[in-house]
Image (cartoon, rainbow, N blue to C red; front, side, top):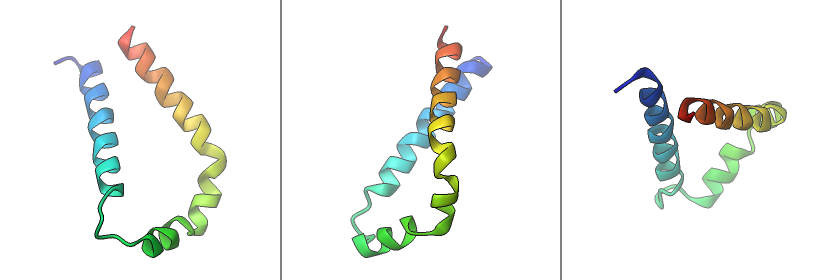
Length: 64
């Protein structure tokens, strides 16, 4: 597999792993509220949209 498809596969596998982790029923809603209430998320929030679009553009470039 070439390097570009390895990068795409790694990104997609990481996304699947994060989504599976977020769906664990053993973690209560109160715990998630505590985790998502950390100050680091509010500090990183202005950059999430830019990071998302950069990753989408990278995947489009790798696909083309």
